Image 1 (cartoon, rainbow, N blue to C red):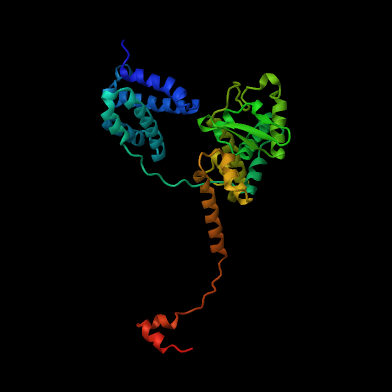
Image 2: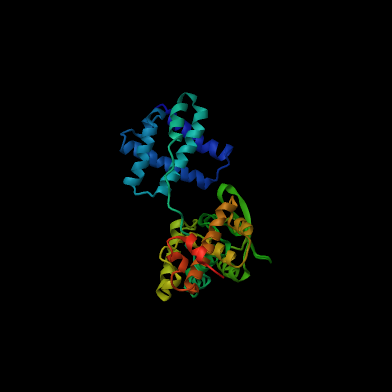
Length: 339
C-alpha cells in the first residue's frame, strides 16, 4: 500500500526534524508521539478513517477542534492537558506549512486555534517538619525501605523533576565534597545541583548495597524496578503516596491531601526561599528557563506572610465613627473645626 502524505510528513517530523533541527529531548518526542497516537485513534473511531488511509486533507481546523472536544468529553482531560495536546499539534503544523506550501492555509487555520484558559497552579509543598516526617516512614530494616528513603531524599534534596530522577545514572553523582548531582532537564539542558551530605549518605548506602558504585554500572539506571528497568512515573508516585499516607495517619496537618512528586520539588524551592537564598540561585537549581517561572515561589511566600500577619492582627484603630463622617457636609465640619 502506498504511504499517505500524513504518514510521510509525520515520520520526518518525529524522526528527523525534532531531534535533528530542533534538538528536542527524547521525552518530549515521546509525548508528541503519544499525542499523535490519540489523534489517529480519534480519526479511526470518530471519523471512520483508519491510519493507513489518513491524509493531510482529512485533518482540518474543524476536525482538530472536534478532537480537542473529544479529549475533554470522552477522555476527561483537563484544560491543561488539552493545551499540551494542542501545543504538539501547533508544532507539527508550523513545521508542515514550510514543507507543504499548498496546504498552508489550513495549517494557519489550525494554528489559529487558541489555548484554553487554565486555573492558576496551586503550589503544594511540605514544611520542613513534613519532610522530616515523610522521610522517617521507610522501614530501613528492608532493602526496599532503604531504596525508597534514598529515592525520596534525593528527589527532595535535588529539587529534581521526576523524569530527571528516572533518567539518572550513577556516574552523574559526585560524593566528594561538595556533593553534587548532574541533572539533564527539559531540552537536554544540563545543570549541576549541590546536595547535602546528610541526605547523600542514604543514596551512598543504597548504591553500595546494589553495587551501583562499580564502574560497570556507571550508566545503569540509578533507581530501577524488579525487571532491572528504569522506574516509571507511576512507580515513583506509588512509593511517595504509600509513605505520605503513613505520615498523614501520624500527623494529618503536616501532609496535604493533594501531594504529588512535584510537591517535593516545590518544597525544596520554598525552603530555599525561606532560608534567604536568592531567586536567581533557586532558578538555576530548579533548571527554570526564566526567572519569571521561579517567581511563583516568592508570590506564595508573600501570601503566606500576609496571612500570618492577618492572623496576628490586633485592632488598634479607635472605636466609633469619626465625627466628620457624621456630617453631611465635610466643608461645614471643616469650617467649624478649631484647634
